[in-house]
Image 1 (tube, rainbow, N blue to C red):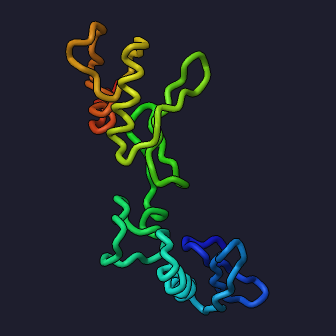
Image 2 (image 1 turned 90 degrees about the horizontal axis):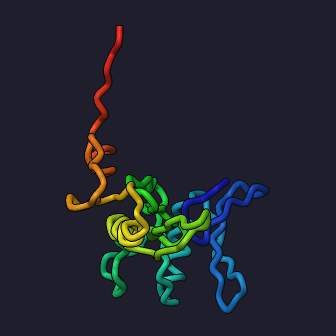
Length: 165
């Protein structure tokens, strides 16, 4: 079974969840548990004293900054669709990536904490290339404005439909 927790694995033969933490490159077995959450809490109990930053249930009083999208469980449960061109959610890094294609090849523009920052990085590279489709088009651009507004406006507003008949 897939799990949403770090250091937790389903053991099919035992019909139980196993908690494991790696110390010095070697696995340290923390026990078998009836529930996935109990195994995740056992992992956290061992990982916190070791100073591991990636916990399943981080406490608010920890001295490291909280991730902007919440705990690991919260981040994995939330889908990250984007409304911007050239912006993608990178699940492994928990960050937004900006990419623009030039000559048929992807050009990586960087990783960003916010979706809007990644979209602005895309626009900063796309405007000098003369791309017409921007996330935040400026009104002084020399190309005609799309009749339904910017890309963001078009995605947030439903396009009017006409019924012929």
